[in-house]
Each structure stands twice: as structure tokens, then as C-alpha cells.
Image 1 (tube, rainbow, N blue to C red):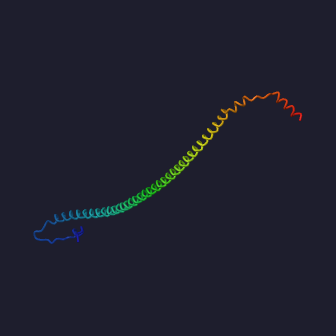
Image 2: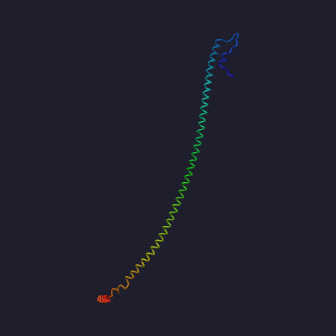
Length: 171
């Protein structure tokens, strides 16, 4: 057990024949008591400071642990958000591809339908042209026939017509 300043103060030395100077020993002991008390106070102050710093260190360790957990949670949340965003992006791309395929297929179908309609119109146009050409040629043949010349050569006597008309009116 360490000595206390009181132990030092109360220490009595046996006196010998040629012993130490009592005043000098007492003065040295008094100085020793003061220094020892000062060291004990310093030690007590340092122990209190160590306790305070240990408590603060514990507090900071607790904060560090909490921050580390928060960082881990934040990283996990960020990874989850990133994963969800990637999944959503894939879904959007898939949906867009489906829509694009549908639009392309519809456009191809319409293009095929229009191509068929064009072919049908070409056939109808060819038939119409052929029929129209035949009609015009038939009309030209009629115009070029000798019947027109014979019609022009046909003479009608207007006096005979007047007489015939009058006879009919009378009847």
C-alpha cells in the first residue's frame, strides 16, 4: 500500500548518538509531504481527466459505430434504389421494344395492304384503259365507215315530205 502524506508526516525516526540534524530532516520531510500531496492531487486530476476522456472516447466510439451502421444502411438503400432503377429501366426498354415491334408490324401490314390495293388499282386501270381504247376504236370505226358517206349522198325531196305531212294531218 502506498504511503500517504499523513504517513510521512507521522513517521518518527529513532534517535541515535550521532543522528541526523532534526531540523534538516523535518524540513526535508515537510518538503517531501508537499511534493507528495501535489503528486497525489495531480494523479487524482489526471485520473479524473482520464475518466472524462474515456467517457468521451466511449461516446465518440458510439457515434462512430452509429455512423458506420448508418453508412452501411445508406449504401444498402442506395444499392436497392439502383437495383430497382435498373429493373425499371429494363421494363421500360422491354415495353418500348414491344411497342416498337407492334408499330413496325402494323406499318408493314398497312404497307402490304396498300401494295395490294395499288396492284388491284393497276389491274383495274389496265382493264379500264383497254375497254376505253376498244370503245374509242369502235367509235372511230363508226366514224370511218362508209355509212356516213352514204348518208350524205342520200337526197330527200322536201316537197314530197310536205305533201306526206299534209296527208297525214288530214287523216
